[in-house]
Image (cartoon, rainbow, N blue to C red; front, top):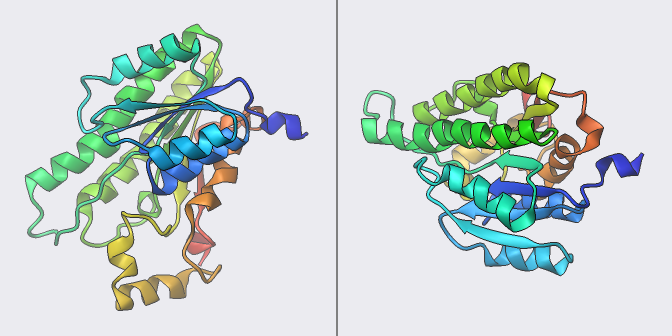
Amino acid sequence: MTDMFNLSGKVAIVTGARTGIGQGIAEGLAEAGADIVGAGHAAMPETEAYIKGLGRKFVYYDIDLGKQDKIQALVDDTVKTFGRLDILVNNAGIIRRQDVLDFTEENWDDVINMNLKSLFFLSQACARYMKANGGGKIINIASMLSFQGGIRVVSYTASKSGVMGVTKLMANELASSNIQVNAIAPGYIATNNTDALIKDPKRSAEILGRIPANRWGKPEDLKGAAVFLASRASDYVTGHVLAVDGGWLAR
């Protein structure tokens, strides 16, 4: 049974793997045996050191994921370097907080371009390769706001609702090509994106009071879900959004 979760010999692109959720997932996939391409706009020395310390390979790929001009090159260079591409984790994302009546077009476009548009076109580029080479796994990072509205983050909510829809559509179209497309919806995880909430005593207490697990999540809490969705153990799972939320949605 444990062999079904073994990722030895697999190659994964993980976007936004420098810190937080992306770092935790990249480390988890490497712990299961995968080699990692960390894609983002800043070097990832801590992630790189950890993964290489496991005896796995790590390559940092410099790319602005708020744009789409280097997406195909990322896929091509990954295949050129490692000879294959098996897993994509679309984790990179940004958030902008502003009251809905004041929300600017810039704050809308920045978030949608990063969180949804680039996610789709990178998934498309990877899926084209995967279809021609026997299949693969695409894992998108959704959110509790794929299910709920939230406040003061309208473009983030729109993008994450879109991520859930794109995940399901791609799963439908790509299942016959042995490509499974799923998403993880993290609950409230202590990361750079949630730092403002953690530092707000009132909002933080409200959030914590609704989490049955009675704690904020940690990036390492996502490792198991990511390895499952990246491995043979999930070969008959597609179009699913897996909440890793400490029970938030159940309350």
